[in-house]
Image 1: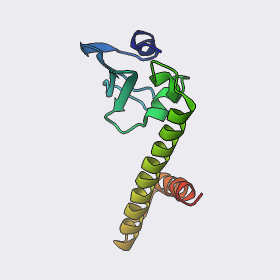
Image 2 (image 1 turned 90 degrees about the vertical axis):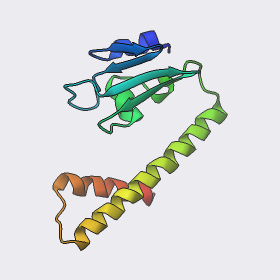
Image 3 (image 1 turned 135 degrees about the horizontal axis):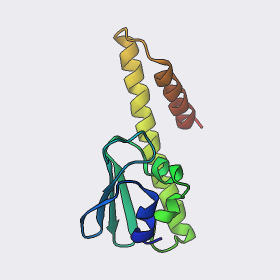
Length: 127
């Protein structure tokens, strides 16, 4: 997919440079554009400054992570990306679990949303 096609999926798109855009993030209730879209080499990079992941962003507009690449990925690159994403996610999950444990040690109670996220992290780490 090329960037010109990609940006049509987003609201309030504004070009801020060569191959650089801001837009509303579709993965959360965005009121002020918090999504950065940048074309670099053979891919489109997305960064939500509110913390949404690339997967959440593309899936919320009906796209796949592979749509961020200007050329289709071969099987070796797909596997390398899956492995890297899995390790990055596992690190984030372990960090969240540690934060939850720390909060409990200090007598804080987790909200139901935090407990659900903790459960999801635990399941991903231990699968």
